[in-house]
Image (tube, rainbow, N blue to C red; front, side, top):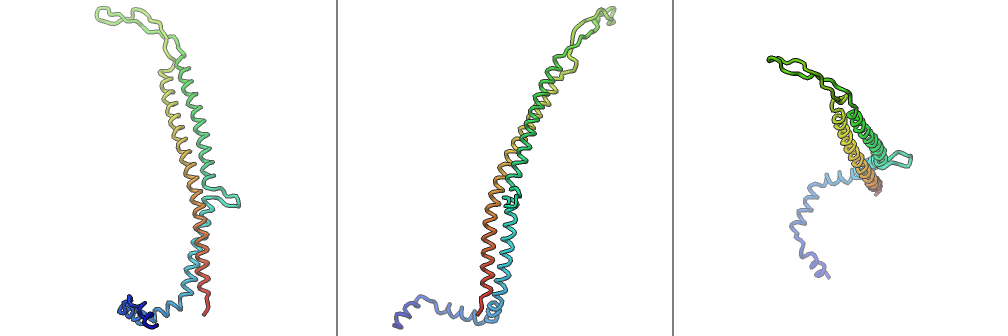
Length: 201
């Protein structure tokens, strides 16, 4: 029977076993302190983990909303994105009006009178009058059209920002839900550690 028992320990390096025993014996006071202080360490560590879990749950409520009616990051970003979309629509309308106004102003012509010059004995003198017409404003359509194009580009940029806001809001809301799960698990783990500190001999 003993032969079978000792056969199982054939692979154990007795020198290493002795080293471990010596290590424990030489540091017995530290191990005793550790054992004595272990309940306090477990309680403090458990409290810290529970506190981190509570903070994670609060942060989650900020990102994904709560039952009290606080909006999620996704809902807030959706509101902002909708406002930007409305701004883009208004800018598009303003751009159309500017382009149309430019064309109408450019179409308004007024009569013009210019003197005709002739050269007499090496000098220019008025020799008649030339009648014509010209625009009331110099290249108004071109300038307003440029402004219209800029407004359209701003609208395109706003549309892109609103799209990115929606995507960011959705990602933050999902992160908030994940953070809530992490927070609950941390609180549970912290509570478990604290309960271990209450074991009595």
